[in-house]
Every structure is written in structure tokens, then in C-alpha cells.
Amino acid sequence: MSKLSNQLRIHEGVRSHFYRCTSGLATIGVGRCIEEGSLGLSDDEIDYLLENDINRCKAELLAFSWFTDLDSVRQDAMVNLLFNLGMTRLMGFKNALSAMERADYQSAADEFMDSRWAQQVGNRADEVCEMIRTGRYPSTS
Figure 1 (tube, one colour):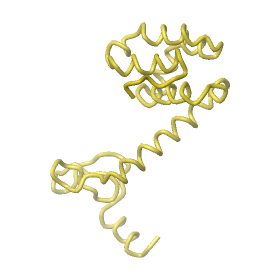
Figure 2 (tube, one colour):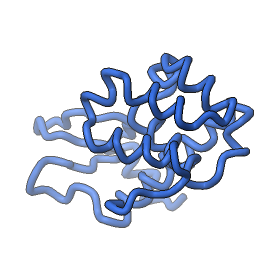
Figure 3 (cartoon, one colour):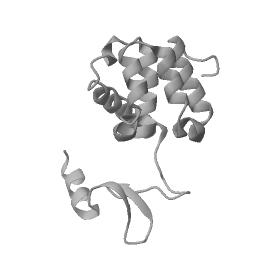
Figure 4 (cartoon, rainbow, N blue to C red):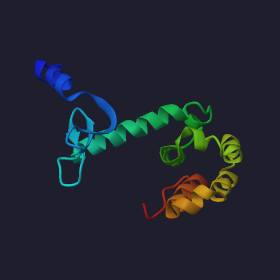
């Protein structure tokens, strides 16, 4: 790391979560203002963060021995679910996860659809559950 990077880290501080700087502005990282109308995040930075989150979700899903046996579309559906729910809430779908383990994708999709999550996210649930049922992305994606 360069001397300038080190100095900026010391002067600005390093925060992994949102905070308000001394001027009261929403800030992250090393002094990055994310207020509307400010620098915010570039498309490349957003893509980088998303890719990291997808990779983190895939790594977390390796906790399920059956995850690597899924086709790529069903793996993507599980990543989408974990991305949205987090592991704690995903683990609450015991019947759906049990059906996934048995490769009973119709039952798994039905279990996911019969939930408060599905009511809350609407079309997202329709698409993710179609991916689980069929192993194909819906035509709308």
C-alpha cells in the first residue's frame, strides 16, 4: 500500500459500515461520501461489491452438501435467496431446504412460495421459484 493510502486511512479513518463524517454526511470506507449528489459509488465499484457478495453467498452455500450437485441455474436461485434473506432466515425454510436436498424441486419451490418472504418480494419469488422448479431462467430475466 502506498504512503498516501496509509496516510489517508489514518486521517480519514477506515469504516466498513455507514457512518456520518464530521460534516454529518453519510460516508463509508475511507471517507467516501455516499450522499445523493456526491461521488457515491462508480459502476465498477458497484459491480465489484456485487461480485464479492455473490462469491460470499456461494461460499456460504457450500455448507449444504447438495449445493454443488445443483445445476448452475438452481445454484443461482439459491444464491439469490441467500443474498436476499441471509443465512439465518434461509435456514428457517427447513422443509424447502430438505426438499432441495432430495432434489424435489417442485416441493422446494412450493415451500418457498408458501411464505411471508414470497408475499413480500412478489415477482422475485416467482422468478426464483421458477428457476428452482425448472432449472431454467425465466424468460423475463
